Amino acid sequence: MPGQVDELLRLANAAHAAGRLAESEAHTRRVLAIEPDQVQAHLLLGVLAGKTGRNDMAFEHLGRVLTLNPESFEALFWLAVLHRRTKELEQALGYAERAVRLRPNDAHAHNGLGMCYLDLLRLEESAASFAKAASIRGDMAPIFHNLGTALHLIGRDYEAGMAFDRALMLAPHSTDSCLGLGQVMISQTQPDAAIACARKAIAIDGKSAPAQLLMASALVENNLTGEAEKHLKKAVDLNPQDAQAQALLGQRYQSLGRFEEANRHLWRSMELEPRQGFAYFAYVHNNKVTESDRPMVEKMAELAQEGGLPPREMDFLHYGLGRAYEGLREYERAMGHFDEANRLARKIKFGDKPFDREAYTERIDWLIQTFSGEFIRRFRADGCPSELPIVIVGMMRSGTTLCEQMLSSHAEIGGAGEDRFWPEGCPRLFGQNWNSFKPESLARMGKTYVDKLKGVAPGYGHVTDKNPANYEFLGPIHVALPNARIVHMRRNALDTCVSIYATPNRVPVDFAYDRGNIVFAYRQYLRLMEHWRLVLPEDRFIEVNYEDVVTDRRTQLERILNLAGLPWDDAMLHHESNDRNVNTPSLWQVRQPIYTTSIERWRRYEPWLGEFRNLMND
Image (cartoon, rainbow, N blue to C red; front, top):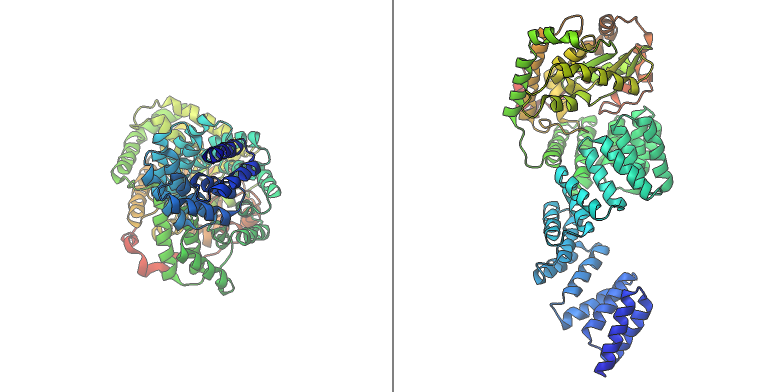
């Protein structure tokens, strides 16, 4: 009899290994008919039941294994897998922890434990488990993929990128790892690398809706929004039930000012996946919230109270709730959600890394000392002579998007949006210590920049670039392009800083998530702009107050047109009809007729300003 049992188990295991599951089960049942408490037979039958979706049967047999042998690693491992499948996450975690205690040097055990932590959104513990598994087995692509996923959710994107790179080295044709790496590249504002990942994923699986979504997102980041729309539509066609695709398509229509279509897709996304943050945020960002929206706002508040969403989704949810409660004039509740949104955003984007005020100050000092009036006068004659660029700068949330929307309504002015050319190119040019560049190289940068603007907005005599961060680089920009026009948008300090705090940023901004850091950076901005005001020529540089634009836009626009040598165009008074793509947080505001409600917005939050009060006199 023992020999017969051994032979049947051998046949059952061989059939299981060959994928002949029904045959394996038949042999296993014959074993149990002979020996009802045969541990290996119960284990195999439990695994077979789990693989064929018969969860109750799987739990029964695997439970029997633990009764007969409480230290069966295989039973513990599979029970963790099955409880994860049935969303019984705490039970799954308990079995996974027991499995790791039995085999502390087993990579599969640590990977399984990491998956349990990941499901429970205990992300730091998840990443630690995957890292342990990877240290044991450096040849298993799925472990590195899982590690990349956990690190990306935490916000440790540099490490996540390395993990996904390793996964792709081990499994070059993994669509999932291509997509994971692509998402990391978008988070690190490397859209070209994200496009390459999406292109590879589409080549591997042309019917992958997530691959189409990644391509669309990367193209939007690269200002190729027209091309992005076809990929979004394809993603929706491939999987109409994909909530993320519906939300991103809605956001795409927002950027074009097609708000009714946007709302339709955003509502569809919320129907498909009520437990999310992004679609809710996009909707309240796209609409004036009134009492009729109260049920939706209460649903959002319940989601926030329950928790359990990934950090990025929770972050969007809190930003959305802040905006919603502001619309409902419940300002204390709004500020509470903005506080939580900023706490999450900082954790996601920078982890525990503090904002380095000393390094920030040293960079501003270097720019002021290097790009002196004498330096600028000496080298600008060698710059690119093009008059194409109109560079619109200012502190974030100062009205640069509105200015560009108005100017690009002019028949002779195209709009390039927020180009990353100077914020990315200048640090590379200046070197790690900001002192290793050759001035003549700026002229080459100027020519490259002009060619890029022509590619983004062909056929115009002037093209705007409204990246606010360019205020740091006005000296290099003027040396590189002495005939470029520079428009500095200024806005009330408190309104600016409250708006920074209340608005999520696509590109990580190291100072933006803390009141004290925002105040510090704002004052450094004022210091640098005072320098540029002294050294830039008046026929190339103009300053415009946001409040003046709102109250008397024609006068202010005529000032800018005079600087550029352009005639008046009445279309600039109807900027809300401009159908160009807008891909910034101001995409809704710039589609509306001029309104003044954003002036002195800070007063709504006066009791809760905190360190922003230090700007009262600025």
